[in-house]
Image 1 (cartoon, helix red, strand yellow):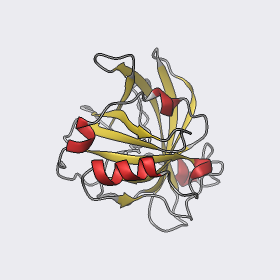
Image 2: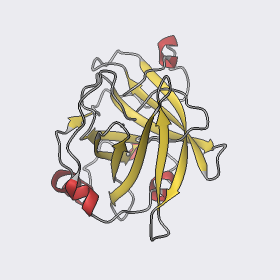
Image 3: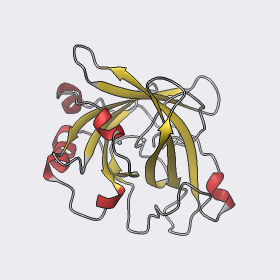
Image 4: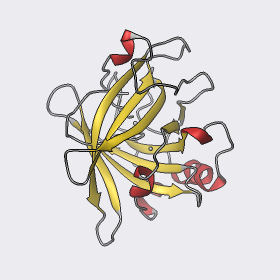
Amino acid sequence: AEVGYQKVGTMIFNLALCLGVIAASAAEEPMEGAHKSKDLDIRDVINVTERLVVIRRKHTNETHLRCHSALKMGAGNDTPGYIYLLKARSGTNSSAAYVHSIVNVTLLPLKGSKRYKATYLDGENKPWTRYNLTLKQKDSNEGCFVILVEKSTGQAGCELVVPVSKRNIKIPETCENYYTHNCTGTSLELYDPTCRYDKLDTNHNDSAANTTVIGC
């Protein structure tokens, strides 16, 4: 709701939000339960104005990055499109520097409906990896989201995403239950209480915060 950290200009989105892996990992099992359930409208996620935090995910688990987040910065150059600032901490140590990427979301209509999914490209060199993001579950107050991430590399899995203001409260059961019972794969915790989300749209007073990392 995977952080790929490479500036891709007008080339599209990731929420969550954050997604990829520095060390290439094998393609994962398809999300049978998530694939078969109803697709919701990803615009419910995009309409959130505060930073989005990835609590945990079930894909691309061979990564040292933690504290993944995504902040909508404004409209993109594509129509419809939205620029997002993606950040993550480069290590499990609380003192590790944060890395970032700027990406541009593009919306794609879901077949047979008026709903949308999102897509973006990420990668240091061509061919880039494409990420497709489909909203699978949310709570009635939009306090949590479960997003299915599908990569052109064959990896796929769910992400459990919340607005930053709700990161330390109990995750609504509608999202927790969906993530647990409909999303297969090993879950990786990306959030912990030492994650910093203050002023992450700046250099974080650390020159390393501008480092670009491919595959997060």
